Image (cartoon, rainbow, N blue to C red; front, side):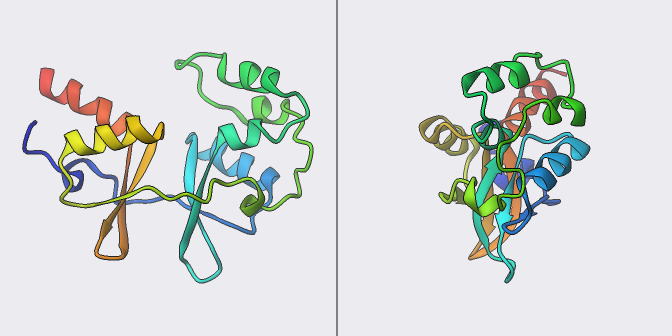
Length: 154
C-alpha cells in the first residue's frame, strides 16, 4: 500500500457537469448517477470548479434543515430524485457556475496515497482531480481511498 500512487486508484471515467447547467438539472444529474459531486467544465472544456450536493443544499430556502433532511438519511440509503426535489431549491434555474466552488484541487498522477489523504484532510474535500501535465486524467474520491483498506484486508 505504501507504493500506491494516484494513478493506481483513480477513476479515469471522470463525470463532469457544464457550468451553464441549471441547479435543477444538476440535482437530477447527480441523483441519476448516484454521485455526490463532480468537476465543472466551461464551454471550452476547461475545469473551472467543483460542485456537490452540499452546494445544492446551501441553495435552498431551508438553511441547515435542508442538509439534515438530505444528508441525515444515512450512508446506506441512496440519493433519490424525490429526496432532492423535497429540498425546495430557491433558484433552480440558477446556473451551476453561481453555486460551484471555484477552487480546484489537483495532484499529479504519481502522487503517493499518503499525500492524497493529507491533501483531502487539509482541504476538507471529498474529491481530488488527477492530472498528467495540465491534462485531467482522473479523479480520486474519499470512497476510492476507503476501498484500499478493504482490498488490503481481503
